[in-house]
Amino acid sequence: MQFVFDLDGTICFRGKPLSEPIVEALDGLTRLGHSIVFASARPIRDLLPVLPSHMRGYAMVGGNGAFAAAEGRIVAAVRFDVRTAEAIVRLIRRYDADYLVDGTWDYSYSSRADHPIRGNLDPDGLARNLPLEQMTEMVKAVFLSSSDPDALREELGKLPVVLYRHGAEEIIDVSPGGADKWTGLQALNVKSGRFAAFGNDANDAPMFRQAFRSVCVGDHEELLALAAEHVPADERLIAERIRLLGEQLA
Image (cartoon, rainbow, N blue to C red; front, side):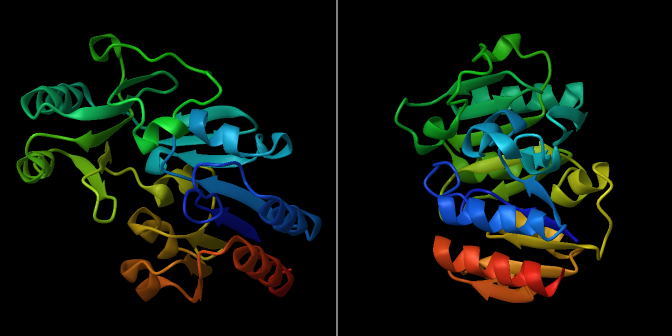
């Protein structure tokens, strides 16, 4: 069985590397013959630092489905078309927005140094932080703040993109139209009804709908309605649920 794990808020907390109980639980899955896929809103570049070295070649979906990687290399990337990318840049300027724009590897970041997302951004210095006008491709955009969030969301909703808003925060994730975690998993040949999924937020819903078994970490209302199981956001309880489900599905 394949096991698909979101990272932040699911098995990774406060931006820190996977804890020892989580790593032990994941290693237990592989010993039972299961395979593991990580599926995150992070780009592949920012997935790697929170994983132990022996997991960095595992299959991965990044950028809410905009990236897919296997054996340490990106095998698929969905980019904004030129007109949509230009429209996003115009909205950044119009609404005086702080942002994170990702290319396939490099990025452009404009916000305060102590913003929570900054601590998770390229902590190993693997990429370049380029001026926005030097980004020759755009795979994902995150609006961190703006002068008029409601008007910004309305304008973004007119574009051929996928939007996710993070809880009560004004952070808006923007991915190319048609890109979500399930499309990213399909790029890795993951089959509907043949994997178990763990997640904690709205961007996990597309893969939950296709999973054989789904586990909601925490209390996200939309995911709870889709999930077969629920576990509190406690690392030891999550590790135990991973272990038990691995044994059940072996």
